[in-house]
Image (cartoon, rainbow, N blue to C red; front, side, top):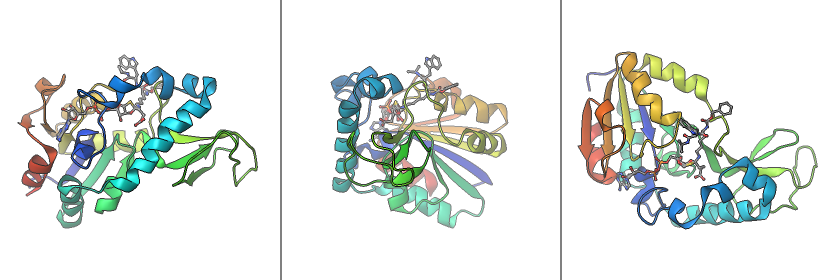
Length: 228
Ligand code: BJW
């Protein structure tokens, strides 16, 4: 690859063939659940049990899925590439790390973590959360929430991501519809700084025109071929 600094943005499409639901495809999560009921801070304030139930089910679902060849190809790229490779994922599953990626930022949080709204401590959690759970750090009860970035909240690691977007000479978006900001704007930011941009996706997206190179197909076919 004639590049030295690569930023890869991944979305739900890269995990689809592992059996993780996407959001906006036919039959996706937002066709079954109203996002205003589960993915906003207001929903959590109104009905924490409902929100815990939604994320408990998805957390339990992680035990039944495995990384696919697209996740593995990105991990291999990081290990073998002579320049830098940063994977920025919007996904809250743990399939990139299980495939072996280490230079990885979860901008929308992680299903396997919780944080305490009282003391701000983040910790790992693999089991179910309830409204009765207490924080092992400050001892408060009922203050733990899934460590997920909901609508209206600031995504994580934005400074680090912006810095990487300014520095990269290749930006690749994989399996994301480009419907959610700020991630949807990363392609323009990378391009403004001179990066070559590529989109790998099953279907056309709203941002097709923004990319220099557009490839259509399944992530498990496109990603291994792209990184070769
Ligand atoms: C395949 C495939 C295969 C399928 N192979 N491909 C107006 C303008 C601009 C912004 C806004 C606006 N109004 C509101 C906003 C802000 C808002 C936003 O963007 N809203 C939009 C709906 C317009 N954004 C936010 O609120 C964000 N925060 C923010 O902006 O903060 C600013 C701020 C400033 C000051 C103070 C405070 C804040 C936060 C966004 C949080 C998003 N959270 C979610 C849910 C939580 C996580 C969870 O429960 O899982 O994150 S929403 C959901 O969408 C999830 C995803 O990460 C995210 C992106 O979805 P993704 O990954 O693209 O999935 P899909 O389903 O959309 O697409 C899948 C794609 O895969 C498709 O294209 C398929 O074709 C493809 N595919 N199979 C290859 N096998």
